[in-house]
Figure 1 (cartoon, rainbow, N blue to C red):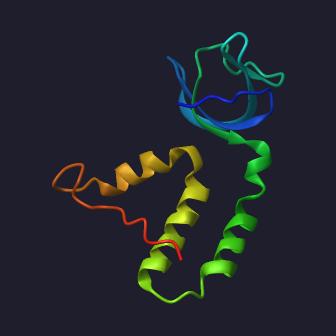
Figure 2 (figure 1 turned 180 degrees about the vertical axis):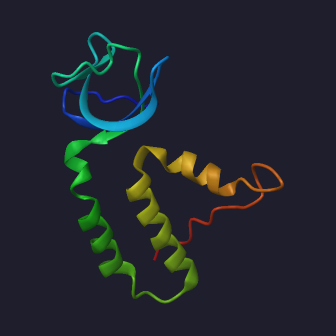
Length: 125
């Protein structure tokens, strides 16, 4: 997993698997690249072996709707199913962020194995 390169806050999906708990939750945290460790803002997160599963910068969380609406406004009216598929792919890239490749792999999986289906990225207008 790619790690943040600065001290900006990130919204992280965190896994806590221990003798008393098995949960996944989200929390705003930060990554200290000098010590190579995730840190919380005043909670005991990461003191019991919690792991970050995925993350995105907090500032990016608030731009998602506007980015999607801008794309749909700019490209939604262009004719051609291959262009519409490109628009769908772009929306999923915004929504899934760092997890895009994992999402596509899961989508491609099916009854015949990992390449049962093939995600279509479409054609840019």
